[in-house]
Length: 106
Image 1 (spheres, one colour):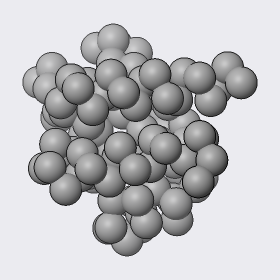
Image 2 (cartoon, rainbow, N blue to C red):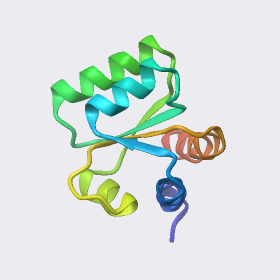
Image 3 (tube, rainbow, N blue to C red):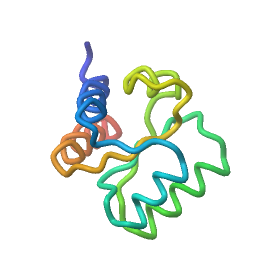
């Protein structure tokens, strides 16, 4: 497995540990409640949802990354048709941030 997919393993672990939130409205609630540590957004998300999530992240200073498509995201978390996920635990978020920052720079 190449390095760029390591974040999917971390995301899977975070999901199984119950540290993730799914669904646009729930994610926005987590961001506003200051519980969201990082938001991952599928790169094939709809424009309106994308704007809503990124605006909230920017306003509340929550880091966010665009990742693979919804298929890959859904597979990693074992839930069908997901376009975004909020990770609400600092350890997982820190590791995801490191991995994704390296990918996006590389």
